[in-house]
Image (cartoon, rainbow, N blue to C red):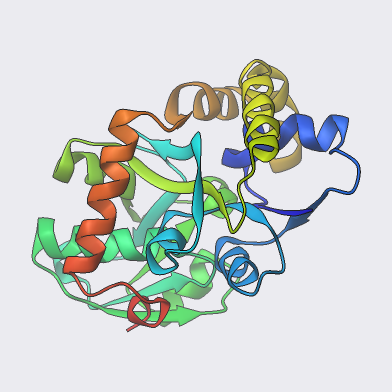
Length: 257
């Protein structure tokens, strides 16, 4: 069995013990960004992954593993639009090519909170300054959003704005796959529970790896991220899907136009 995995700090508690203690015999972890994981699931290259919520909207064959998510019930600090101008003066936004849920949510937020429908461009640029050479603003996710300089930039936190719009958590990713067996649910649930019991250790290791202060990593994992897919998270996920449908965003192509 091949399981996809995101290379981001926010997923570490879900896979920490799988990485550290090993997988069941014959299982394998494959690392890729959200956009690629969605493709791999669609092509049946992997069985399951902590994939963008958006991927489950456009592929109804994907089954969501119960009880596990990557979400935030307020500012998340790792899914950001960074801009050179105030939001009312924006015309173009460069998208992180790996983003799916963030790209969809940003379109919804700009339309509903600010009545803005801007031009989105996908770019292969590797840094925020390069992205901002192509557009007025840049959508950045994951570790790059946490580690890049925000000096002189306007910061738009998508989870904070989603909470403002809906009063619900922003669910960015869920464990989902083509086959979600009871064995897989048990393995993933045990891994999540073990990871949540070792957040200090994870924060210490990731602090050294990313060059971020321990306190930043510890706060992010312990008090910002939400890993339990409970009733409010399910409501947030359902509303996210409903709004994506209402805004005509139920395809990857729609996100980049």
